[in-house]
Image 1 (tube, rainbow over the protein chains, first blue to last red):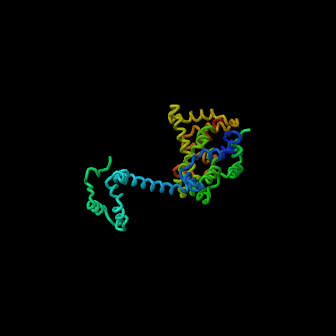
Image 2 (cartoon, rainbow over the protein chains, first blue to last red; image 1 turned 90 degrees about the horizontal axis):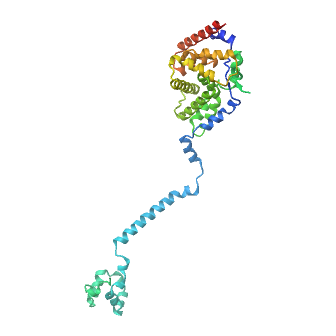
Image 3 (cartoon, each protein chain N blue to C red; image 1 turned 90 degrees about the vertical axis):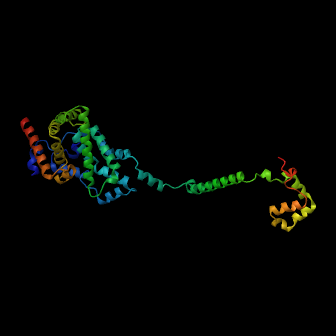
Length: 144
Length: 208
């Protein structure tokens, strides 16, 4: 059937169409086309998975975690400093009456007593009151 | 010296011609192993290289016979593989790889011809004159006058007949495979081929 259709043409000119290509065109065709193929997303992902991880890439999550904790610690520290009495106000030098009282050997002895460590601020003020010191006196205000 | 198409399939003897094309590896279908490697991201690129090697030459000639000039055929062939590569994950094993690539190549070639037609402001009826001009512009020919005449006669055929004739006559493709590629029934393809052959025969018998 096929030959019935094509015999006349085949007999005359065959399957030759006279087309040619540049020298060596087919020799380099595969390489040229391969080189022009773009990298696909899944190839990049795979390359990332295969590539050896550097020291930095391995420790990076831990560094980030440590930095986060340091940041949280710094923030909490800043809040505690701004919220509480500053260290300058806490100094005994700002309270001359208290300093004088503490320099009294009797008071010092009392303070050296083991009960000092269990005495709260209210008890201490009460004790000073009894010793004749008035914490509400203007002269006992901090020197600021 | 330039490689000639006759070095691939220019022998007038059909059997020798078919043998040469088989030797180029282009008649082989992709193996299931190759398809499996195409689906594996680790081996896909390498397997695609083998696909280019397997079908590159054959697709080139299919495209060349449609667009006529080597430069355009080369560009379209690259676009064909680029498109296939970009959509390789969409390639399903139920369709034959060869059929899929041929579909892309033919669509790319038809799109090119349509663009050329619009660029030159040529109607569909006058497409044959545009193709004859492209044939005249083709630098890579071996000077065979009879072969050149055949190209020009094929250019005068309607698009479908031209396609079917090229695939059947030069590529020796089975009607069933052509049917898959072109989405046309085998009967219609046989009719198109028969008409094409008759027109070409008529042309050469008149010119004798």
